[in-house]
Image (cartoon, rainbow, N blue to C red; front, side, top):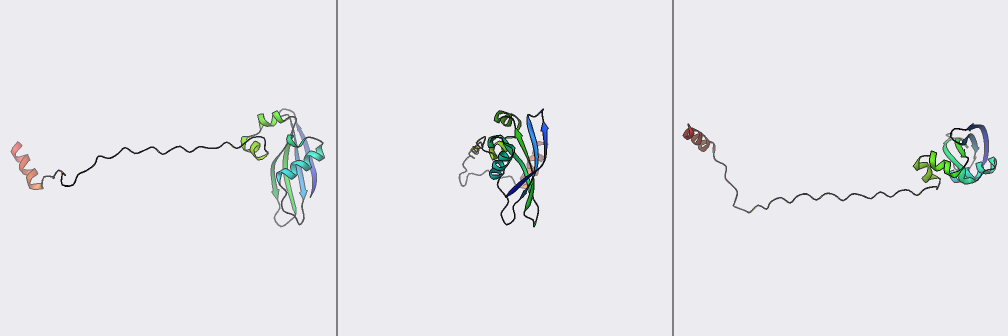
Length: 134
């Protein structure tokens, strides 16, 4: 695996250096984030913990990839600026475990006893009851 830095840009407001790089990995699978972090840290002379690999795009059919990474001035800056999922990917934070809510119990329906149903009046009985009221 050969890593070549294409461009570096100092971002003073975000306390980081933004690096675009190219990786040649002929005959090998796409490199992992961890191996890229190690290689970029070695090339830039910084600690591995301060490097965040943002994205990596492998070119189809070729043994090369292009990527973008951020090298922060401190680990605290990473924790302040990077999203939680990026921190989880780079081992700076544990993935929060979601607890499922228990399903709400349905209210119990009243028990029905056989043979105790109210009978509905027939249509003729309804007409007779209306006629009596008049």
